[in-house]
Length: 616
Ligand SMILES: Nc1ncnc2c1ncn2[C@@H]1O[C@H](COP(=O)(O)OP(=O)(O)OP(=O)(O)O)[C@@H](O)[C@H]1O
Image (cartoon, rainbow, N blue to C red; front, side, top):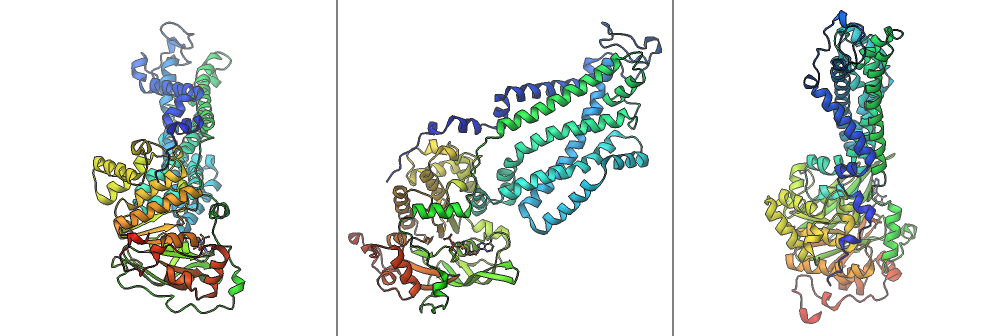
């Protein structure tokens, strides 16, 4: 029963390297570390300018004009007798400070709008995109000249405006990444575990955009420094304060008398720009083979399902039932005392012809201690039914009719906050693909502890103790090691056990398992089903087992509902339905896939009778 642990060291070396934090990855790339060191050195020198220099960079002494380098004036003096070293160090404040201001403004606007537009999509996305396109269409230099003409040559103002003009670049980058990440199953899993929007965005989404933002900011920094220096070089900046662009402008005037004056601001600009470009490129190289556990495409998931699901019946041609036999009486029965009661549920998506229902009047109920199998061909609406119950329909989908009650609480119409507090505590979810439902960026322990603290209000210590106890309970041999592992360091079977531990940790009334064994190999499937059965008995949960495997139904379920084209066509106890299927569609599914149609003897009992161990 206990699954053999894969040693943590079994993870490929490259993977463990890739798991390092951003700081370690920068440190492990010599070019990134050196360029970052150079940048840090220059920034520090600019900040500590008053300590490093002996001369006021703006005070002229015409008697000292155009002196060469000396122990007093390390880099010589300019045409007004000002110390060049002081002007270089102080000038960095304007050049680098202005560039930093523009970058901060661009990132604050672009990252925020990209994050929300990418995550929520819809009208918000379209309107922000419209504004972003408008900003991109504006000629930046003309705008900066207009700002200077209207408000004077204030470097901070012009760099703030330039930051706004640069924001669309960050917006587009972040929006593109976030709109991909929001569909990751681990983000769905975070929603199911009841985490707030801020936490999901902060913990799971921001982490994915962190590295691309740093790389893009490094390269955008080169552009901003170029624009700031260019404006000063053209004499459009404030000539009373030193900057590297202003120094280049003065050097140009004296090019034939003192060509050396061009050298120092040129070197300063060259070194900073080179360091920024090398840093951006090295960081990209260090990060580019980072593993991403992506949501598998529907087709690959289906292929995997077919491969692993040995007794899955071939999906019958919907056309064979186009005539549509009526559902078998009792198809919409909701047993008395059901802790989950769904009546006449309809789920619709917008289409060219208006709202199209993909779930069409489903009624079902599950009592405590009971397992209901929800079976049907691919596309019959099982997952949509489950997601509607969890309040997790994807964008566009909505409940268009019917009622859902969990432990007496009616769900449709519930506020998002109230729904969040139910998820995990009243209703929990076990997904189909364990690996994709764990965030690759965080250790298993963190992903278990966080919802426990949020949902049960436990202290960090208690939540950790409970998480370790749950890992032990679900049959993980070394809970501490798994707790300290990243998802890529454990096997698929262990990942599913981890998700089961997380799902049942808050003792939910209802557990929805959506094909929980599809992505696992056959031996592990049996172990996971055994575990689910044990936990369901132990915690007296009502379970809805979404599957298209009649073997799983026979092995595990008390009752079964058969779905076809968004409707339940037949619903009964497992023993009655297997012995005497009424609907032609049920018969076809059973004949197509099941060699041994006899359910376990233990299941041949009315659902409200206690389990007879002797009959096992
Ligand atoms: N985002 C969507 N927009 C529009 N229609 C959708 C969307 N998602 C699913 N559907 C429709 O809902 C139907 C039911 O899909 P659902 O995923 O519930 O099927 P299922 O029975 O769970 O299949 P499977 O066993 O293959 O997972 C699909 O046939 C599809 O046409």
